Image (cartoon, rainbow, N blue to C red; front, side):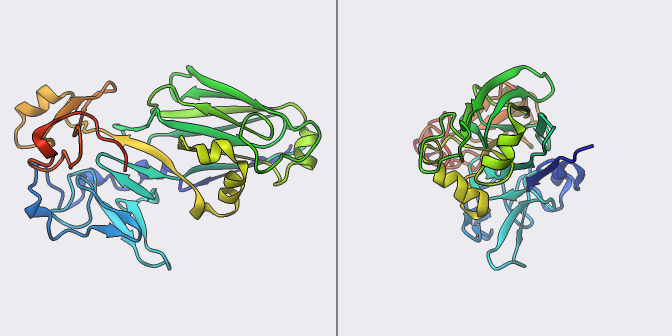
Length: 299
């Protein structure tokens, strides 16, 4: 029987098995003022930290604690005590690598890969794109749990090596734009020519990853190959986080001691998020500039 090797970088599922950060000591529930957070660590390596995330007592909302690992040359930021790396952050969300590499084998035609949110309230934002790189395969992407079809794409190489420096448009590379936020996904890849996949691909096998929609990747496959060989060049997936200790803004506002926002918006998946229309941090008392509310954008 042939063997399929699947490597997932910074697997988010590990967070669910790790001690849940909601019970971490030092977490707070009330809306803090900017002055009360003045002592908090502002960054880890080159990643800026925004409340409700934080490091140390009094610096994070319960469920949002972080750890800065200084054991490597470049400090790395992680969710709680888990192995989920945070490579970028904005108010109410973060970026993390979701990468799969498959070693294809002759005679094997079907491969699967999946990702599930590590905790309720975390979703992959609908502004992400699923990229698949390799030769001669068809891809179908399903929503995790419901198995609803999210999208599909195909890649062909015509008996040649996948070209670099060209758009990711179905020749050695294809994309699926997410139509909405997802709690997770499952991808099914069907090879149409395993011999060609083995002999004609510039790198053996297939790589797939989720990333914030980026025309650097769409327009030039060289950037994708660079990420394959050097993960530090990779643009991670952008994940959204909602507060789920209450089902809605209205219910949360009745629980004054645990209400998280200076401005609030219900989440379609349950719970609520905190938003600013312009700039500022909606998780801090009077944190939204000009007192207006509405969605904020990733930095």
